Length: 158
Image (cartoon, rainbow, N blue to C red; front, side):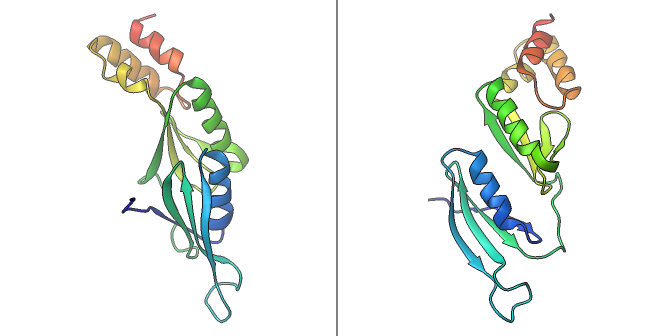
C-alpha cells in the first residue's frame, strides 16, 4: 500500500493535467474527482481535487488557486528502457507549450519538471573507466534530451 501521495497544486488546470498525464503513461487512470460546490471560494463545478495513478503511483491534483507555481526544486524522474522511450516521453511532455531543459530535464505545459532518464545512463556516468565517465558526463551536460548513443560514444572515447 502506498503511504505517500504527491499533491500537485494547480490554479484551475488540475483535471486537464491529470487527464493528460494518464494519457502519457501506461497503466494509468483517474480514480476520483471532487468539485467545488455552491458558495465556495472557487467556481462551482471546477475540480477541487483529482486523484489519479500514473503507472501505479498515486497522485493528487489540487486546484488551489494562483498562489503557488511549480519550479525545478521538485521533479519526477522517468526511467526509460531505450532511446525510443526517451524520445516518446520527451515529445509528449514538451508538446503544447512544454519547455526543454538541460541534461534530460524538461517542464511540461503546466510547469511541472520531469527528468527523462535512460536506465543505461548511470552505467556511463559512474562507470569503472573514470576518464570515460568524465567524457560521458561532459557530453550529457551539453545535451537537452539525452542521446544514449552519444553518451556511449563519449564514454568509449569515440
